[in-house]
Length: 400
Image (cartoon, rainbow, N blue to C red; front, side, top):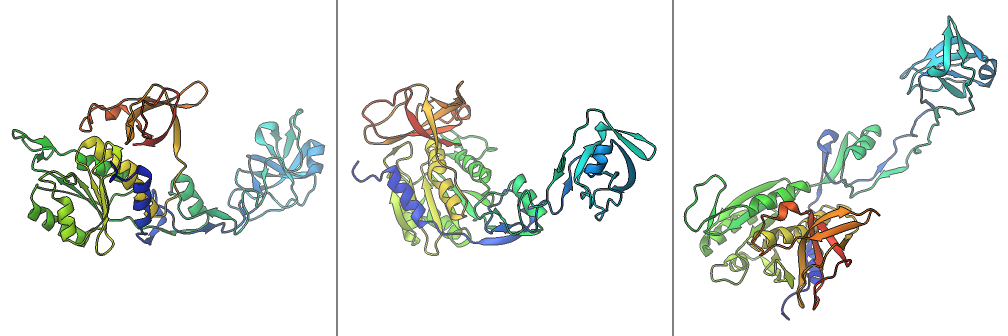
């Protein structure tokens, strides 16, 4: 096992090689789900004026003390600022309107009764300066920092962009990715099956994993177990795609041609084989023009584990995405380990009565057994150990 890289070393090697894929400007309506690559500051104070928070009447202390208040005007949302010229009077106001000049509080309509041009305050109505008034600048001040590069643009972030006049936004460019399934035994989803064949599934799973993280510029293809065909296919993809993700053909079997084909094309090997289960044969390298190549094992569980443990975090780093701290879970029952290999074990998760995140191991029978994965939420990473990880142990969790 001495030639195998540790999981930590493999992760660091990959991350050190990842460069930015650049950025582009897109219209705000096309920015949902993208990763921000600019700083966004407040266009002006928010709110930009003392804002009425309730439908009702706006008045000053004199009017509130009088209890019967003469109506002298209206201040609707979107209107220019009106003025209260009669200290004992009031103006009708709506939610979102500017607080009229000369007023210092708002009485909700539910606490009033109108008699012609007079508003009568309810007997139990109490008020104070600033009541139901959203003060100017109380949310943020002009030029305050609102968004930093690296955040994924969701509904709240898009609201901030729109409210501050950002019609076009600089976002990380999405790299073009090719997913290549290798193997003579593979039949497509809609093909009739010949003896000895299995259906292609890894490429669809990998495509779903990538698309779920925003990497949706995807091309799926297949290559047979043939050195010339593999070399020819990879040559074309290296010329047209920034990231290549291969499934299968990276081990040391007599028909595993991917490493040889990549060497012939000038792709520099950075790592091959990691001290982990599943996914030991994983390969990673860089093309002559900086293309990134991930050679994932062909077994379905191995391919998915390697994708979520290495491929997706590396691509997220490359687009400048802020990543959350690792999630730690508590094992609900013991989980298998290996004396010399880091083990990735699929788990179900739930929260106990105290809110602690619990993980129930659901080990697969082999790295080709993916039928049980839909019942899991992800996998835990367990360090090499001479005995199984005990119930109550803490472990890092990686969600699918």
